[in-house]
Image (cartoon, rainbow, N blue to C red; front, side):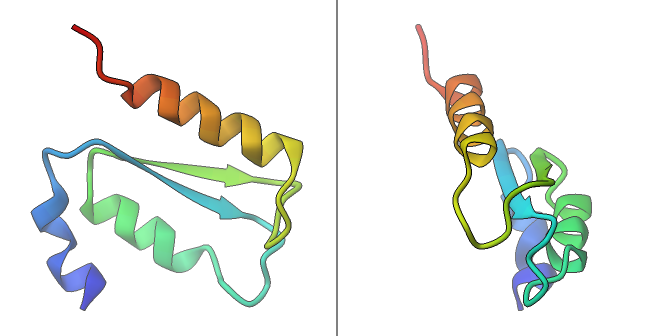
Length: 71
């Protein structure tokens, strides 16, 4: 259902984060989603699975800064 309706997100910027070593959640789904939701940036973090790491934190903060509304 998510992938089928994902095209409705086009026009909305976003970021998808995935920890590469997360074995229980393969990269395939966020990769497919990023192909449909064209304004979404797929960020793959090599040292973060389901465990939060400093690298993941920095990537999330970077994305938030890019999406921050300014006048």
